[in-house]
Image (cartoon, rainbow, N blue to C red; front, side, top):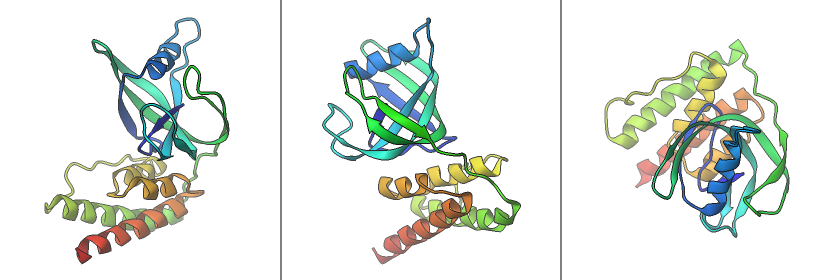
Amino acid sequence: MFPLGSVLFPASLVPLRVFEPRYLTLIGRLLDEDEPDFEFGVVLIERGRDAGGGDQRASVGTMARLVSVDAGADDLVIVGLGTQRFTVERWLDDDPYPRAELSMLPDLEWSEALAPLRTEAEAIVRRVIARVAGEQSDGDLELSDDPVTAAWQLAAVAPLGEYDRYTLLRSTSIGALLRQVIDLVLEAEELWSAE
């Protein structure tokens, strides 16, 4: 398990600089030639720091598949790709690194009836990103042709704080995810307008 100060969504990338001995051990075990396992769990640190331990951790997270590893002099730079969401059933001892017993959450399912909601969510996210960036465009925001992946990508790029992002991660349906993206991004936009 890799507790972080940020939320990882399915279909999103997480670049990490790994320097703590316990996480270097974790990555070493993931790459073990005898039993390679290229996935690790990522959870949000709700309270505390992401270095040194002693943190409070969220109960829902995302598995990450290790997609690249680059070695530095005394650290590693890794990239993980979010795969499936999980619930932490029980935290185990942090020695030699954080570990937990998990239950995988079901994948969210798409219905074509949600297409207008997805279109609305995308338009709002693009508009607010452009506003926050102070530009007339939304940059190079490219979304997957797969509607479930695109919904998670919208959640990942929405200009929100980590607790709002955690709310999105806990969604129980694509419809709920898209509605919450819309509501939370519009709330954030109102706050920026009031400043």
